Amino acid sequence: MPKDTLSVTDNRTGKTYELPIANGCIRTADLRQIKTGPEDFGLMGYDPAFLNTANCTSRITFIDGDKGILEYRGYPIEQLAEHSTYLEVAYLIMHGELPTKKELDDFTFLVMHHTYVHENIKTFMDGFRYDAHPMSILASTVAALSGFYPDAKHVKDARARRVQMVRMIAKMPTIAAFSYRHSMGLPYVYPNNDLSYVGNFLSMVRNIGEAKYAVNPVLERALDVLFILHADHEQNCSTTATRLVGSSEVDPFSAVAAGIEALYGPLHGGANEAVLRMLREIGHVAKVPQFMKKVKEADGPKLMGFGHRVYKSYDPRAKVIKRMAEQVFEVTGKNPLIDIAVELERIALQDDYFVKRKLYPNVDFYSGLIYEAMGFPVDMFPVLFAIPRTVGWCSQWEEMITDDEQKIARPRQVYLGPKRRDYVAVEKRKPSST
Image (cartoon, rainbow, N blue to C red; front, side):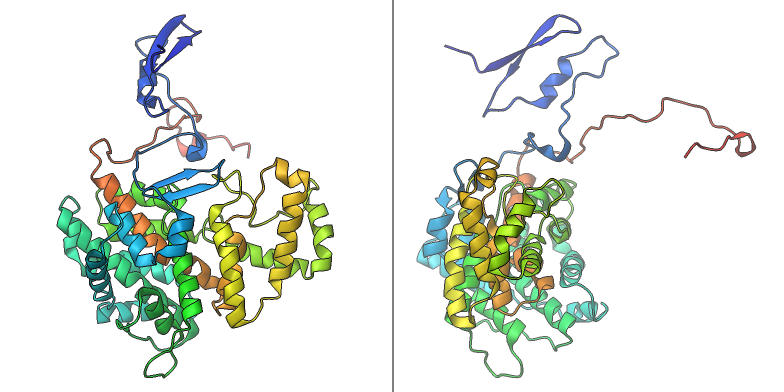
């Protein structure tokens, strides 16, 4: 019977080492024993962007990119999107199991009665320029919450952790809505806890002088499904940022703010905006074949919304969103860009060039079309991503905090700079060659 080990022969010394294999991994720290001599630091792994390095174990989200599988705590995303609600999924991600009716009612009550923010938060947000990006306001305000809740620093206290997690999930839609209203020059609308989690957010965004905002149930359900699809996605850039910052045992508000800032980047949270820009540049369905031909050229445009770092087949979230888009357009009217998007997808799925490269639509390909149809400006797209991802960030943060193997993050580096040299007085220095 084969042993779960890896035998490595160092051709520099001729020595052979046996490294244990567990869960399909070797521990890179085990490479340290491979040395050329006593002064040698030992072998390290070099993996820019962590393309093949696991920095944690997790029980939250499972992805099989080759098969197009996404599961939260073992439940397929397709089933959750069809049958569940965002708060039910949030409970699942936080607690590991789907709630009973009473547990869900209690959790919903708890979240919905933490939606209000301190009045000073409004004053803080008023300090931003009228044209400040909503993501900048969101990230800064979430980071500022640590000043309002000093008990958040007790990260080793299980009860204190859960209090902060509920606070963040509850207050994120309020802060997001306030960020939108600030950027639009509109007065803030307070939460209405008689509404659902998503309905309350839409009310805070859309209500203009109405005693009670009537939320369209189709749009409410569509956004709820989009929130489910974005709740967590394994060790992506923003989740890794949250974990790395949180490893210093800083309060969770500061750690999640780091995640928001990572999401702010155009390579992460801004991808659906890039899709809309591409569709507008194409302009008409008749121009799609010519555009796809140019994409194949070496210096041609990029096909935005296709392909994914993880998925090498159809992103399961994209299938759900495509169906949801049709329901939304029945209410809002058809987005003229959808025809261009559908034709792009049709050609890409039939053309060997794209099929061989495993370029399939991802979650960003259709989500921007829905957000735009619902009346959200593109600056709000990453904010709409951040609201549901909050439960993922919080749960990943707590998992990291309670993992005895985790320490403060401190990656190694490969130094390629100058060797040791002595200081030269300024009058004796020669001009640099650059």
